[in-house]
Length: 356
Length: 275
Image 1 (tube, rainbow over the protein chains, first blue to last red):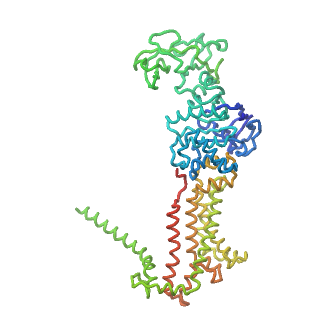
Image 2 (image 1 turned 135 degrees about the vertical axis):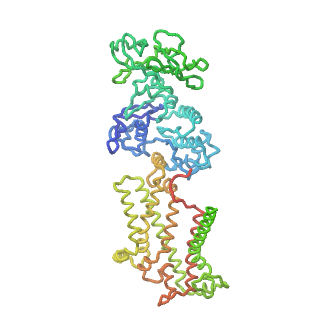
Image 3 (image 1 turned 90 degrees about the horizontal axis):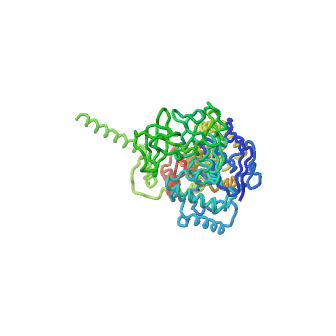
């Protein structure tokens, strides 16, 4: 068990591309930590640098209180699960799981016993003598997990381990992974570009952009109060409504006026340009006008299963709101979107940072 | 109607062409099947009352069996060296960033195929002579290996290029040493490519005449390809009885090996992971 501490870590590739830009991060012992960001944001490079597969150009890495910045990957006591699982096609499942122990020179009988234990904890008993090529994607993924578990590392490093699974299996694997990590209590760093995965799995998460962390917090914090417009736009399965607004006692959006949320009044000057954000889940739909509502016509209905995403457009402002199924209006109806004033977020228009 | 006729004629013409081309390549093979068992073989491929007399006579020549054994030894030595060196080189070239790497490979390939053994024979002879390796298998093996390596590296590099690096990285994270990674991960993944290189080297060495002919002076060391030459008279007249029988003996091992490897490992001329 171990904590992972990164101090002003820099990774610059030949050619001057800075994949990690002076990054500080403290991942606590036993924590499930997700690194989230769009492709090219440096999250995979960061994971590979923690693993030792990339050498940092600056800063330091500590795992379990030991400085491992210059230590070879094999000496760091970490296990990595790759996106393509990297199962050896010429070895049986049991040999695949036992391979790390073979490298450690654990006697054959003992490593096969450990592999069998790890395999059966992941429901792989029936597949132990098969080759990876004869397994389904979900089974392959579990073999990769079993191999990491059998190694008993201080830290698990996961590089998008669920992205090769189909949607349904991915949800199952996600639940399974979270429970497993909870039972083992092993510090885990999990890279993903899928925000729902990060929100569902992580104890804490970092949203990355261009080699920097744009927000660090629990999934609830990141979802409720995105620290800047980048995170606001990136997080959420339905995109957040972002309205350009002018401060005039309230927040003027087109011809509507939204209330200023509590706690930020003192920090806004009249006439200031801001961006107001509200999630479609944190707004309601009304069929009659009222103060603090954005009015318009329903232009689009999208089914989310148990709810509908309703797009309302009027006076150049487009707002989206989710309504429970059966309560959705018809396209062409006049509608009023009423954001929950408690959940309104105000961002500076020039720096994109959350006000208050 | 005219179009129909033209189509039929075109098909007939094509079939005749294919048949002629096939016959052109098949006739020497047929000769190799019939002539060794013919009491008085000629250059024609014709069946006759079969006899094993030609083989009895050919085995009276003491060089025949030693030469076949010599060919096997030379082929195995060279194959081992080519496979080992090309695997290591292909892996290294595939995994490291080396300025001018691709150019280097193309130049090597170009020189090894364009500047053939014949053109380079005089400097090669001098080199081997200076090294004191004339009349040794080491000298012949080294020269043959040098000629085969560029193409072997080129083919194997394609295999290693298409093997995902995550396989090796995964082993590295678990603490495997470079040697363990090579033995446990890389070699098993490129094994089909190594099998291709092995067979290809053996066939090349087996049929190579010039290099052993020039670098080996002792008849007892000569491989089968060189000994074939001894079934000609001083005047260049071939003794067809002995020559045909020996030719068959010379061909069979290669065919058998090819079938065995094909059955056992299967040839694959491209890389990648078959999941």
